[in-house]
Image (cartoon, rainbow, N blue to C red; front, side, top):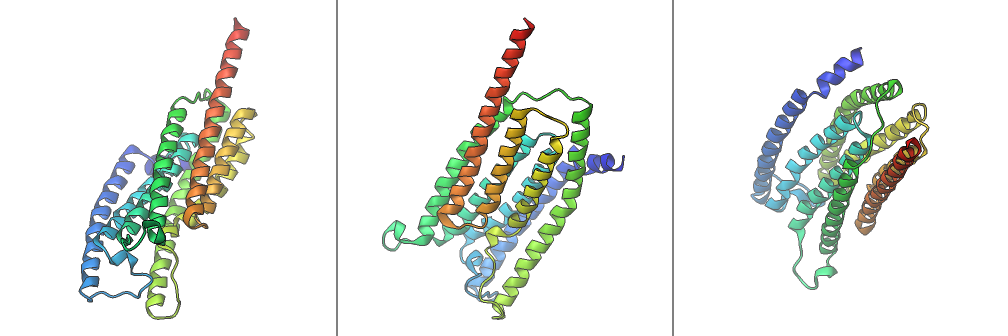
Amino acid sequence: MQIDKLFQILFSEQFKHRFETIIIYLSVGGFLLHLALIGLHHLDIFTIRSGSDELFENPLAAIYTPFSFILIFEVYLLIYFLPKSFTVSIGKQFEIISLVIIRRIFKDISKIEFNGEWFASSYNMQLTVDMLGFLTLFFLIFWFNRFSSKTIYVEENQDIRKFIHMKKTIAVLLIPVLLVVTSLSFGGWIFEVQQLNANIIQEARDINSIFYHEFFSILTMVEVFILLISLKYTHDYSQLIRNSGFVVSTVLLRISFSADGILNVALIISSAAFSVAVLYLYNKIVLVKRKSEVGEEM
């Protein structure tokens, strides 16, 4: 079928390797270009209005650009694993969010204020919250991946193959969506910065929310759709609850992009902790069921 052919092309190991290589070159090139713009900004050759110049004040802010390209590749990997394992794709979501936070840390670390008390500065406070949040999220990702590796998967049958084919179709459709959302989000931000410099608008969107706000909105709808379709192929209560819990986690991640400061980090940590708890309980339930089935057979 056409979908299978497209899937083999877009999600083959060869394509993934080529895409990864392109991302590496873009990351290095973007980093050098960003450094050059920072140098031109300090020489007053390249100027940008105050309020959108935070990415051009300190060379450390240049690290923001390569992380942005790496995040795009991580989003591709999320889609890559979606047909293979819902659980693994959820884990990729948390890895993406952790990179978003670390990228934000690299941007904000250049604005550390040493005057007065540390926590008297809102920048210092946000940086501290982000660093603690990143460490907590990293810890939760470790446990999520550990529980994921212990998950017992059901044997493949005709229904499961149909379900996997449906997820492959969704994955193929998400690739052009990823490209469109990336182009529109970045292009829209560039346009806003130009309007800001021309005094047409007073404030541009927070660069940290660009692309991911829209993509996670789409991803939430996709996961709800997959959850509803899965009802046709499985009637296992524990599996249904696990997948529903994962959707709740994605919704919390989506909401986190609309929050600032401590609330933003708290929503992210709550989402990860909820998924870890759901996966842990799911594994325990499956293990108890398997032991019960073995006992009945004996």
